[in-house]
Length: 442
Image (spheres, one colour):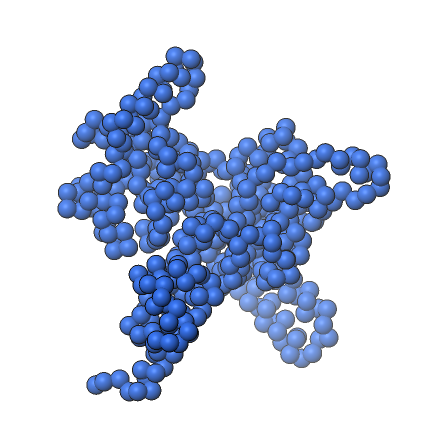
């Protein structure tokens, strides 16, 4: 039976509505590339000069909704310095859902939007965003870059009787933007992630400013710990996690649970025995399924391999430890860095067949950071290497989120009860409070 005229009109309207929604969040060129259409066609759809065919509705819906769906609705998150959404993903696995995100890099934004869609607002440069424009949320998440903190002039300001709160001490750093949003939104909790060396930067003064800001200026209970990613993935990757709570808690890092299985590189490398899963969104980009091998382009060229060997010999002669890291499937790797795209030297996979090692493929890098195979990689290899090198170990974040969650929910409930208590106790309010108490005790 053919579709009715009304049904076809409705589908055309839905298609154009989706186009307009997507265009409010992405450029015409980005949308055209995602749909493999010309920008001119997108412009005609957008202006109503030509109808967008209903056949495009599934692709438009997938773009708008993203390929990674957040089913939990336990608490709202704000994702700052979002990158490709690794911190968000770990919290989503424990009931969180994002209501706002911020990322300035256009390539990271493309990967982020491909996987998480366009349902929540996403800002670019967070330094240009007024905190009042950010929606309320229960948890602030941020993998903020560590910039030098300038403490010069603080003592002079004090001698002049001027304030030296977090705005003075951290002005000009990206941590300031995290702090001002926490100050404005007063979330139940936050999680900040950074490099291990944050604790020793500037002889520990930088970290002390951060703790002083979070604890004394903003009034949060703060807990921090350095966790090595090799507990979850086959990669030595130490990062500091700073958890904060608006109210006192009995939170403890002792509640962390690590997997019994000790991960090795064989867990994440492409399988050459015929068992490598075929991923339609990857196709044969990374793996040659016809010959059951990694694509040849990831094997180092003779010239590059010779250069790396000479470089290592040179520094060994000087007594330095600089050089490539050659690994086998039964090992763990060094830390994946954002410069991996240059020569892959920190993690080179020894190959039984052939005289030269190879780089990890971007899909293997995704696995090395704990991303599942349904995570899409819509950017070039160069950009993908940068993105995964800058990302977090997702299972580590998920475990931190797991032990934070009960404290987050309790603080949220306390806030709800305090809000109810501050209002006249109508019969409806009393019933609502009773229902909340019963739900909390069940």
